[in-house]
Length: 347
Image 1: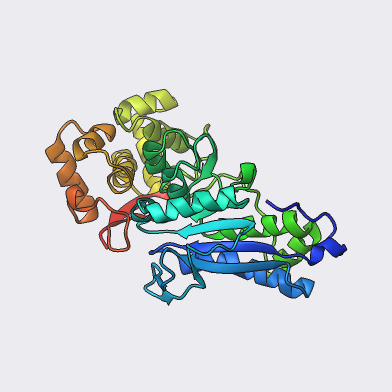
Image 2: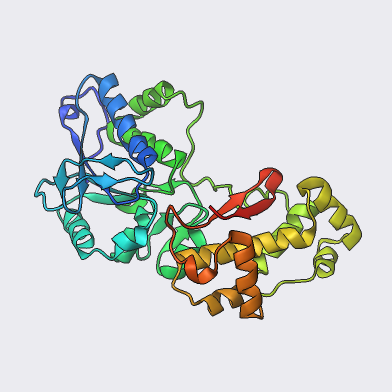
């Protein structure tokens, strides 16, 4: 990658950093905006073109976003233009794009040509499939962490926000992308400009990339001394071999009756319902995001009977697990209810 500018007012600061934004079918328009708008604002503030960007697709044709919007691009992947930073923007159905040899070949070429190659949201799975993430850190959206760990054991998958280490700018998605781009601008063109972009975007504080995400059924757990939080941690760590509510209460150090009352008061439901939600969340991730057989998923989620697992899955998500093997816009969705409880709903 080109040398970072220490003083953005110096003569060498007049040069531009070149970004390639590779759009994959099913990408998020929000993610693309989170990448481009901070660069635009930085140029506007600096009154010069510090950053240039081009949008690319595999064949140079318009790409359909997850919202259904058709987005035209500037170039096909065959362009010989070189870049300082390449970002693969993906969301739904990334596994399909990961099988595209044209994309993986071009990404490896771009890196050999001197670019830092990174990814937004599930774009990291495309890099992993291309062998470009082995022994590297890949922050992933909390819902994709377990599936990505299963598919790519040589990748250090984390549930943090973003990473700019080892020439791999990787964002887990959503607002983390905005914070990563501001940090990237600060590193390339000076901390002061990064601060100004942040102020114009009305961000009250900057989030470091190593901050942990919260989102899933156990994501809000912080106080291991709290009986409910401790019980939920035990549930999350014993999905494959579920423990009885009585055994969990003994480990926590309170009576089962008292712990059940705390669950109902705090979460609005009993321990068994929360435990099943945790197990079905994992099942949903493994069904949609891995190549494990349905039997293997059932065992991994603590079901001794494939029939019971399939019936529970269909009741939870409105579709049989055999018909839910893609993470696409049309697939079932796992819902997170208020107050930390979870509920699933077919879409």
